[in-house]
Image (cartoon, rainbow, N blue to C red):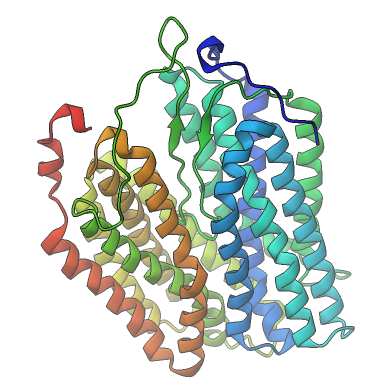
Length: 459
């Protein structure tokens, strides 16, 4: 890795005045798309792999927990490091973490499925190899966003960042769709791991050859993105941009502000809703694959279960994108309406899913539930942002990202544990969390009209 570049003083740096070329945007898009698609493809096959190994479902979820915890811890460190080592270098670190993690995980799972390791040893080694992605793969998302932010004029920055953001959502559709086609005789259920590792190698080579080395002469940090476990699992980016935009090249002064507390009265209603709703979504995603295998009677033939699981997850991802890319902007939904309507839809979908017994009704109910969570998540993000001042946007972005990410540390494993022991308790817990958001939100969340009436300086 190259030595850290010496950064000139901020006042002497000159911001980029032209947009990134189409070819480089495609490459940056591919970095994000590959990691998101690979992770959701993994989710499609892991329930079947766990069943074939004879491992309790909860241990499969706990293997994800370790990686998610490392992501939450390490992503902020990589985000800060990109300002000193360069964004291209951090993208390469993230891709290497993805490649090695998927390659080693695939090899371990293949050996375990062939009987070379015990089920317990296979899962422990899988969790250790998976930690490579949580620890090092988390370097890529903030580096990609910072690269775009530092090379795009302010007028075009939102559009360019939206394009990069969409790669996460698209990846959650592509991954489950491709996963069943990547199961081939020699590798079996581990096939998607090897193929996505190879795709990662191709993207890494293209990155090294086609993307110029960067000299981060001023801070344009990327926000910490959540690990792409679903289309709405914190797949948005927030720009923390200190880049100079004044004619003389000096940075725009940011009004000083005190450290924003999680207990701040302005934020508390939104954060409580975010915690409850986020854990409901994470728990549902944790049990989805195992639920599909059970309801379709595929536990005895787990290889045949990868296709239906992938189909249902793909339907959920499409419904989430429909909410985020279609309903919210076209209906002009405000934060409070998005949160409450989303939780209502998610609650109805969860109840419908609990009583589904065939692939058609399972896919329909899961898509309906995902549509609800797809409405809820942007509403929570936007409401938290609008509740505080402009000077506090960076701080509230970190708080929101932490809540979105930490929901995936324990909730999936807890959901699976309850599902394995008392199925009705698992669905009841998810429905109860949705009800908490509805009752709490209807009483405490700021109305959308109140946000519109706020003075401009607090926007």
